[in-house]
Length: 227
Image (tube, rainbow, N blue to C red; front, side, top):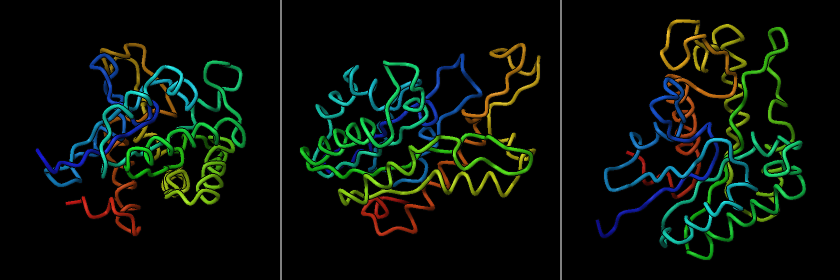
């Protein structure tokens, strides 16, 4: 399609498309296409376990640079694995190499005359009694907002939005959005699983919807591509 616009998603497992053996785990990027016009293509390049550092070092950003076209969009959301500072392959410092790495993503978009959009990390489901922890992804959301302000890059605070959403529905109800399975319910997780980072299909759809609502309420050009 000649005038087709592609939206690239660079991120980690919270956004990534999942293999059949991981279901019902679902990334929010999988639910994104439904909200956009027919001539808009979603290229979900998010990969499980990646940080800004490992995504760049493994050549995934370079692959995006090779294919992204003028007028396309590059959505960037990392933080969960950057937080793993004990892992030299992935860990970054929020106000250090994390921001430097974000700069590399932005430069790729600008070099190719594409449109970058930063999204702060989706929240983890981390409650202390009945209060959700606003620091579940450490300083990375604030570091991204700081970077965006300094370099005048569009940013949506999805961490704040998802934290408020999960905090409002509460500790027990929020389990329905994450990968929580009792033993025997899923062939992929015969012994059950309690995962407070990754979403099930219901959760991924809800996060995608929250991101879309934030785009709708913004003045970003991406808004014009929605159905």
